[in-house]
Image 1 (cartoon, rainbow over the protein chains, first blue to last red):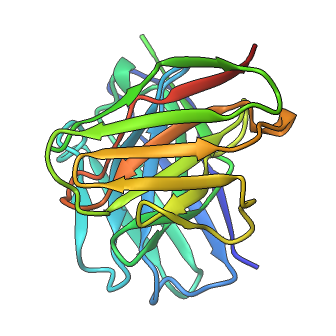
Image 2: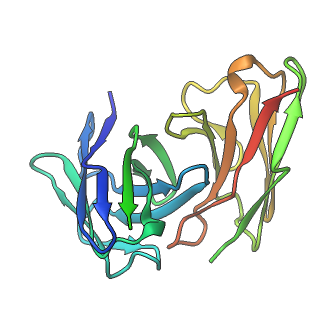
Image 3: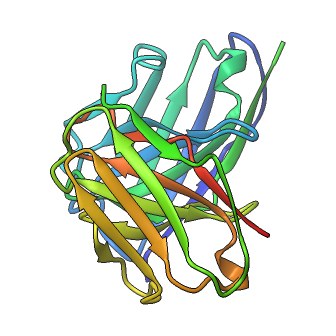
Length: 118
Length: 108
């Protein structure tokens, strides 16, 4: 069955870097894209980035472009979100979610919490 | 960027009653809208896509309607497990994909 498992969250200082991982199983990353969606404590959902099934096309929300990089390793069925120059407003639970044909997000991981401390 | 506005922010309904949640878009989406349910401490779960198609395993008491800029999620007879936060999401024009701010459905 389809499963997504995030890891790599933790506490990082403002201006620091952190890399999140998303382990995918039950499907191939060569067929489906993966989104990153975040949720600040007590707040709503915010789309962050997507890596498309081709591994070439990547898109970011304006607030993270130039600071975050999404990548993947199809041999390991892993997706990564490299985050740098972290700010307090990046504090959130980060979810990876499977992309269904550039549309909705049909499967989600359980999330990993990133806390940026000052 | 397409802005989605959900109303009400909080909805109090008794178990067994009907709940109606609204999502309004800043421009036409055709039918490119999805709904998600999120319970405390859990990831969101896909309920509805294409404005009205239930995702796999979603009970028939959940229904979606609308097109263009106005959309509705209806839960026909609320069960205890339905009390949660509900989000709408558009995929008509991206990036960015955008979500509404959420409607919290609470027990009256």
